[in-house]
Length: 517
Ligand code: B12
Ligand code: SF4
Image 1 (tube, rainbow, N blue to C red):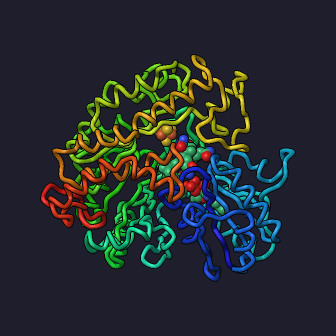
Image 2: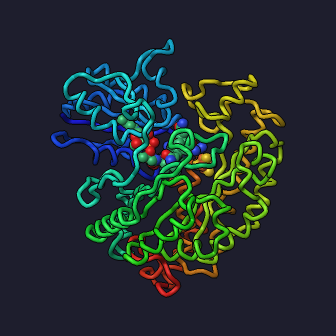
Image 3: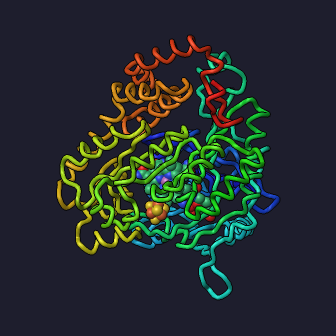
């Protein structure tokens, strides 16, 4: 049987990275079946397109995975596939919580022939075999012989054949830049960001988050060796095809067990398996100087920190009181001293937020080393404690907000401001952080560092800008580049002054050091 695994785009921003679940399920598919992957971010497709695709490629089963944000598109695509006479199985965090909706048992229409609840590592082979026999069941749950939920141990962990897998669609370098990049030096034929996990689960249980409910509050780790092997495979592939690969460790809190993270980082260093990587780590765990040293030595370049708010009352209300705003600056300095920078994520519209929250937050951000601030709104995702609390209090204004997805729009009323005011705060956050002036200031703040770091933050800021400001087409990019031409030209002049070859750090080989510049 030929199986298509499809992940929809959200129609607003382009995801920079493919989804791990597709590679995992591909690796877990029993022999005798062929699996093709289509990421809607890399290969845009509409309903007609997917129906044509399944017909032309003789697809026998389609697997669709989606977060809440993409679920409306996922359902439309599933409907088109089913109308073409092909079975659809859906999985991922949204349908796990809303299985009845996907199966049309809540009064709406049916979108999926089958739903995989929770982690599907163990159920997927069964699903494929049932589909092959024409006996697909409605629901697949990962349970043991006693009907108790069973989570995969991650030891052993499936080997994803990164040396052979087709990755053409995930090259982030536009063809138009190839001639220029060839001049920069060898090794820039491709650039891909690849998701890798080292563990699953999170014990913290923040009120707005799906993770503790979905993956559980105890953490399961892969062995260090299996993570190191995966990095070595990726690194070898990048070298072989003259390209660059960076890794996103998708663990929700990569340093949740500091002792274990240190041992993994030491093993990465010992095996010379360093690639440039990004990971999510909460600020409280970055107090540890030795951990931060190891992060830098093992190839860590960007750390995503869910700061959420600079107001301790807000943090306590969403059960994230372990975040201490008073230590944010110190943590960020500690990272920057080692040339590791932070993606700092904030949520506006929390219950103690009042108009002016964006400016108060920006004032703090301006006093920190340059990074990548991002701003969102408190969103009641299905089945989270937040959803239940707001529902019980009658505060949900759009209880099924996912059915009509609107980017950056609240689905409940905050307590101390209106919905429109909350939207405005988010706009202020983005507009002030990603204006040409703010981008120039961030780049200039790294004048004491080698040019590679300034180029890095410029490119990252231009890309992150697109999370909020529409930047999907070529025209939007040209406009953005023109608006930021002063900073871009300044860096080009500095690049020619320093010699371009030394200006752009190699991503897949060694971590950038002062000596390479
Ligand atoms: C990496 C990541 C991202 C990446 C993008 C996704 C990517 N390319 O990988 C980035 C950083 C861009 C991102 C952004 C966002 N993310 Co995110 N992200 C994650 C994260 C940390 C890891 C995802 C992952 O790979 N997990 C590991 C794999 C193995 O798990 P999995 O995807 O769930 O897949 C398993 C099962 O679900 C199932 N499965 C999944 N799909 C399918 C399909 C089929 C057919 C089958 C059978 C089974 C199946 O099988 C898999 C193996 O067991 C998760 C948290 C988490 N730990 O999962 C949040 C998470 C998915 N993100 C979340 C959110 C909310 C967002 C944002 C909306 C945040 C925001 N406010 O902007 C954005 C939206 C992005 C967009 N495209 O529009 C929520 C989603 C909750 C929900 N109900 O939808 C999560 C769960 C985190 C949370 N705090 O609750 N995210
Ligand atoms: S927000 Fe982060 S720390 Fe909090 S429960 Fe979710 S994954 Fe854990």
